[in-house]
Length: 208
Image (cartoon, rainbow, N blue to C red):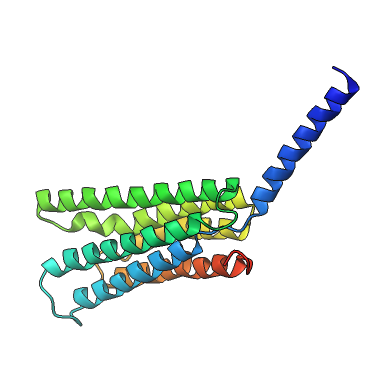
């Protein structure tokens, strides 16, 4: 290999390294999706608490209507926000693509688990299966934040991941109490809504 060829290879490696570093520094663009998830499902959890506690008079079918409506609203908002996000500068960076894939996996897992719980509840004629739902969500959110933290190198997101994993078994102690749904709402606000706002505020003006 000649000196010019060696220099060319070196330049190519330096260029690819620069691209990787630049992509790593690109702002994460999923904040608005997290805000929507935290707000929509957090409010649904508060309404669920109201029904469970007797503050809101509603028939048992209201639970299915409540969460079904929340999912439909979120999916509608998700489609719009995903399209807008894909058009923003930095959307194709390695960090954003990996974080997006990680959170998409979380979302699909939540959807499939929800369907499975509906089937179990229908077969068993019991809502006991849904008592584990908040713990599962926090465990999955922790995985999403772990992927995001790794790819973006934003250490504060590791605190969210660990917080979610700690919250998962802790909220299980509220099983059987209407307070579980208030705790779930608080967790959604803390681990989705609030960090979503932080991510949006980190986006530079030209990206927003």
